[in-house]
Length: 498
Image (cartoon, rainbow, N blue to C red; front, side):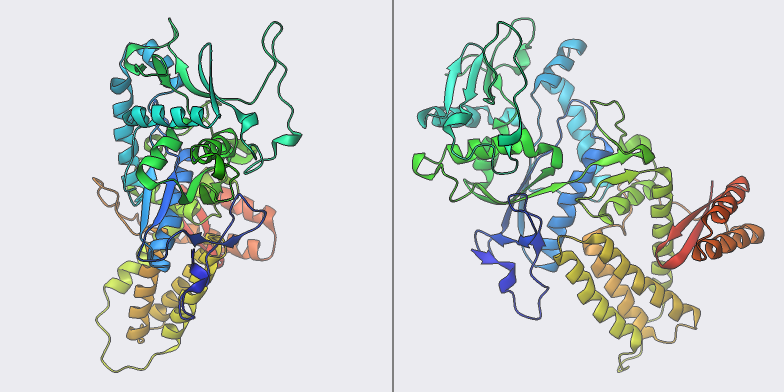
C-alpha cells in the first residue's frame, strides 16, 4: 500500500481521516502508489425531487476531501457518484403523476448538476444512474447466489445476512440492536434485505421493470452501489463517503454485497472492499437542532434558499469552514456571517489585485514570512481529519495581516503579492472565490451611516467585555435602522443592508 505518510519531509503531514471502520483518525492509505489515482465512490441523490441543503453538505464534504488530495497532496482522484433513479419513492411518484421513470427523474438530474455547478463542486469523473447498470446488478446477484449469500423467496431475491461472516460489525454493532417485532401471522423478523423485487401488480410501473433470470422486476436499493462501484472502480476501492445516516443499513449492506461476490475464500473481509469510510454529520434547522430531511418536510433547496451568487458562495463557505463530522446549524445568522466573511475577502482580493507588481530583488519581509508559516499551518490543519475551522482561522490570519499592511500604506508590495498567492492556494481547497455560472456579480451596497457604524463598534466592545445583553440590545438598534451586523473572525464585524 502507498501511504501519504511516506511523502518527503518538505511535503504536508500525513493525512489523518476518521475512518468509520476504526475508533479514531488514522493515516489514509491508497491501494496503489502515485501516479495511480485514488479511487473514490460517493453516494449521490435519489432524483425524484430537488436535492436539499442537507444533501449538499455531503457533496461539499466530498469536494473538500477531493480538493485536499489533489491540491495539497498531489493525488489524482477517480471519483464516481451514483444517481439513484429507481426505488419505492420514485415509483410511487411516477404512479401519482402518470410520468415515466425518465420523464420524472431527468429534470431532477439536470437540476442537481446545475446546483453542483452553482456551488463550485469539482465534477465527479462519472455520475452513473442505477438503471444503466441492470445487467451488472443481475450478474452480481447471481454471483451472490453461487456463493450461498442470495436466495429466492416469494416476492424476490434476498441477501442471506446470517451466512456472511462479520455482517453488522463493520460500521455498526448490530449485536445490541433488537429486531422489531413482526406482525401476527407473519414470519419472524430478520435482517435479510432485498436484492431484486419482483413485479407487484398495482404498485410497479412499466418503465421501472426489467425482464431477467431473476424474474420480471427491479433492483433493491443497496445493490446498485456494489454493482456500479465494481463496474467502474474495481473490486476494491480506497475511499467511500456518505452521510452518517447511511452507515446502516446502506453501507453495511454494501460491504456485505461487495465482499460477498469475491469468492468464499475472501468473504472474511481480511481484504476489505473499501479501506476508508468517511461519513459527514447532518445539517440542522435553526436553534431547535432538527435534522433537515425530506421525510420530515423541512428540506430546503438551494434555489429557494440561495437565489443569488453571494448566497450560494455563502452556503458553500458555511459548510466548508465547518468540521464535516459535527452537526451544522443552518440559521439566518450563520448565513449572514458567511456573507460578511466573503465580502471581507472579496474586498481584500480586489485591493490586492489592483496593486502594481513589486520591484525585483526585494527581501522577504514579515508578511511573506507569515504567509509561508500560514501555508504550513493550513496544511497541518487539513491533515488532522480535515480540520477546516482551523484552516479558515489560518486564512483569516493572513487576511488580517494583509489588511493591516494596506492600511499602513501598502509599502511591502512583495509581501502583499505573496498574501494574494497564499489566499489563492487556500482557495484551491475552500473554493469560494468564484462567480456561479450564469450569474452577474452582485454590486456591494453603500457604506453604513456613521451612527450605525458607531452602534456596531459599541456592540463589538460590549461583546469583548462579555456584556452580551448589551450586545443584543445594540444589534436590535442596528437592525431597526435597516442594517444587519455579522461577526467575522478576529473580533471584527461586517455591516450589510437588510
